[in-house]
Image 1 (cartoon, rainbow, N blue to C red):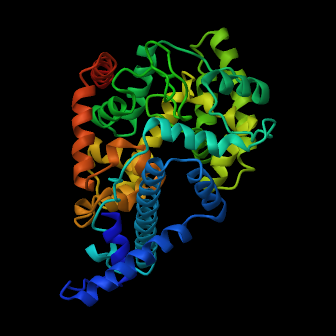
Image 2: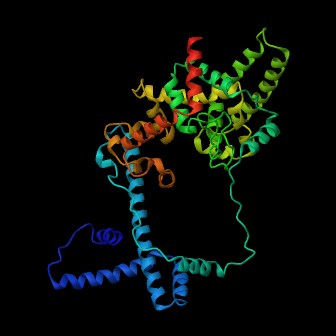
Image 3: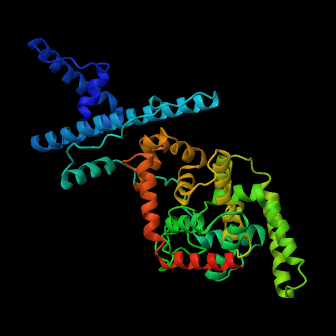
Length: 420
């Protein structure tokens, strides 16, 4: 219970047996102290709001509101304390890794975030509380500009505007064929690619699928910039182009120089080469760190990079090389035969964190140790379990999604590519 957790913090973790009347007196004083703590935990503005609102209530509603406010405040204090401990343990592990020290079970939080189990406000009272909070706010309050996640059309417009780039679209089967050919060329197998595809896109995804948009019905709205079979973020596109752009450029130039291609195809490739050169020149000016890539990806020139994912030539190379990069990190860490589930875990949590989760001690630890509070609370698949549980969930979802039409077609294409 939140009260017990707060009590334990106040008493330094000591549990004092309730053996006499003196303890009951101390408990009463502690209860008073807890109420004081409650109101000290609330900001001055929030206290004024709560006190002012309670003056408008009947005695019964006032008591209901007080009970709710107490429970929520103690719960939030417990949750904040829990996540502060998680972050402290994470810093300790980071420091030990740098020093080459062994990480043990003591370096992890062995538990889960507290869950709110207190009372809720009745709908009428919640509505009145919300109205009270907003009553004094000016009607003409200046709106804060919020970042809206762009859609595919926005990315396409940015690519054309800043680089003169229009991605070459090809059929889904042909895109899969080039994707499979590239994966096999780099030593990856069909399971590693198709099962990741099945989990990331439900086994139905198209080359231009964006997270939040249904790949078949085309309904919904973007929930992130994640795009394509491997669901690369816009910042991933920047990162991969910065690392491999020159290789992509060389391959396009080799394609354009082939004597067997048509003049139309050659002309399109030369236009694409010109655009890619502009992109490479631009990303070279971006600092080589993830935070800089994230920031740049939200600008017009950064957004214009992302559509290379859906280009028939560059897209398959870009996405497969991202998966291959994760595979290579695992190989260097002593896991050369990494399976698709482990590959997806490294993709989901980040390569370094994913590897940590797969250690003998990491597998037994709750997933709270490996995700930010926001990421943990938003992603249902990672909540309430250990790393081993998460791997099991990922595998189960892959098993279900590989039965879908897109995944089955992908397997068939892989088989054809392997025979060639």
